[in-house]
Image: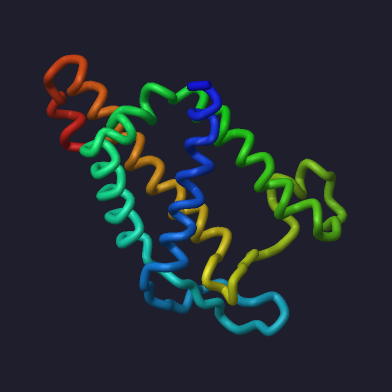
Length: 164
């Protein structure tokens, strides 16, 4: 049962990050990538710092109220890694297979993608920006989980870890 919960932990976190990204305010910026059809510069909705801070507060609150141990991501790291891997495969295939081949080998299409810049929800979600956001938040949560585990087992946090 613990493996199964750990397996789906990243999925749950990705959903929460996505919901926060959609619901929290953000600012629109014009990027440097052009739309393949119209040639106009694409706009991106950014609120990563607000999502990150909200997720850290949520992580702290869940640990403080005893709902989820602070070091959960550390103690379930292998099952979470498996879950993240499977999610990544499903996501990659989901954004590649429905679209026509580029003429390159299938594996190249999976690696490079078939769409130039996938966006959803009237460009409120951009695949590239969403992946950056999920990666940054997950990295921070994993670091916090490691620090919590280290502190709970040894009573100290090494200075090098604090600097990072």
